Length: 367
Image (cartoon, rainbow, N blue to C red; front, side, top):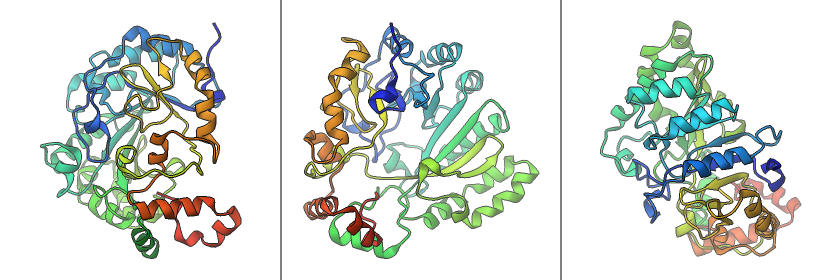
C-alpha cells in the first residue's frame, strides 16, 4: 500500500489526539466546550495512521499527539513515542507542563523526545488561575517548568521551546482602530503587547538565572531589549535562547473559542491552515481549532485516512479558495466578535490587493 503524502492535500503537520482529556480548562481553548472528554483513540488506529503517512515527504514537518488534550495524561504515550522513534517519525511533543514534576515523565521525555514545546502562555499572576482553569499559583507552575529545564538543559538531543502568550498590539493607533471597528484584538488572558509580556516574564527570570551557566547569566540581561529577539511572525521567530537547547518564544494569541462565539463572515476568504487534526474519537478535521465533528471529513476508525482525504478534497478546495462556499464553522473561525467587525472584515476582504497595501496601516488582516 502506498504511503500518503499529506503535503499533496495541503498539510504539513499531523495532530493526533491520543486521548480527549486535559488537566487544564483554559479560557482561550475550546476544551471546556467539548462534550467528549473521555475518548481514547485505539493504539491500533494510531499505529495504522502512522504507518500510512509518508514521513519522508519533503513538505511534511512533524506529528504531534495533542489537539485539545494533555498527552501526558495518556499512559500509552511513551509506547507511542517509542513506536515513532523506531521508525524515525519526526515528533513535536506539546505539553502544558503541569505533569513535568513526575520523574517518570521527565525520564521518558529525555529518552524518547527530540522536540518539546511547553505551553506556558499566561504570565499575569492575577489572571493565571482563571485563564488556565487551575487552582495553582503561577509561580509554582512556572517553577515546575524551570525544574524541568534544569534537568534537560544543554542535552544535545532535546530541543525545548517555551511558549509565552502575547497579543502583539504594538501600535496603539491600530489597536484602537480595531476596537472601534469591532475587530478582534487578541485574547484577554495574555498581555496586549510585547513590552507588557516581557515585563511580566521578567519576574521569573531569576528562576532561569539561578540555573544558568555563566554565559547565559550574562546574556539574560539582554531581555531588557526584547524586540531584538521576538516578533509577531511566530513561525519565523528565532526567539530567545536561554540554554543551548531551550528557547523562549512569544506566541501571537487570538481568542481560541471563536468557532463557537464569533459572528460569521461571508465566503470571501480562504484558509491557509496546514494542520490536519485527528480527534480522540477518530474524527479527521482540517484545522487545529476544530473540537467536534461539525467539519469532520470522516473517521479513521471507520475508513482509511487516504479515502477520507480524497472524499474531502472538494471541502478542502472550497476552504482554500476565496469566494467558494465555506462551512458555517469556518465562517465563524474567520469572523469577528461583533457584527460591525464582520462588516469591516468583509469590506477588507473584498478590497483589491493594491488598495489593501495603501491602507495597510490599519493592520486589519492580522490577528
